[in-house]
Length: 164
Image 1: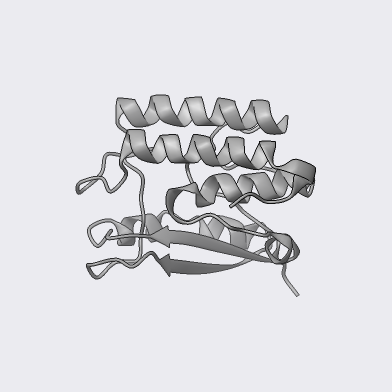
Image 2 (image 1 turned 90 degrees about the vertical axis):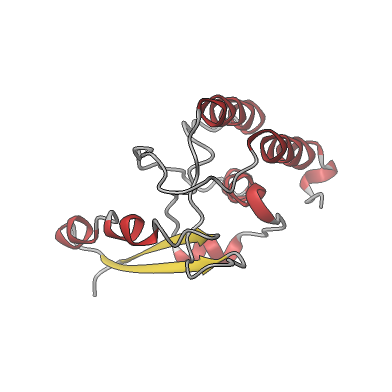
């Protein structure tokens, strides 16, 4: 029996790009490496026909992504290079042990925090940020500040308990 890889795609109003995102999942490469691949698209209450929440990588986004990644690295002592892509792979047993409490954009930070808290190994797959086909849904500064605040709250929570 082949090991399985689940690709989870968080979504919000990405009708124009969902097909291209799914097409870029390296299913054939993973199969050649001995993995069965399942793609799961999770809808974030989209108002159009899509289930893809993509990231706009303007200069502000690139700077914010790097800053948030640096904060996460300092607080967790984990060597991660890109906190904000949402392109992470997990074993089923890891997902079962995550106690996720975030809502919205902070979910990526929450998943990272949970992996660090449980000492799960963290690996990354580099991605290329392409130009968006439509307008961004991300509010760069306010969403970035929410994520930074979330990271700090979780780090400062007494006794390792989760802070809402």
